[in-house]
Length: 58
Image (cartoon, rainbow, N blue to C red; front, side):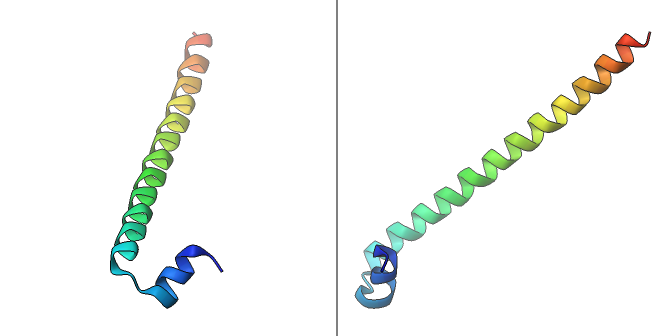
């Protein structure tokens, strides 16, 4: 059994639960931030490609 399952199911140590919840929130925030950066990079790359194609056809 995972340590988190033990803490939530058996121990019910409120301090440990609070720490784990904080870790989860931090992780969710970091994943969202990374996804936004990846999306911006993808959009920038597409825009750069359109710009290059337009410039080359002139």
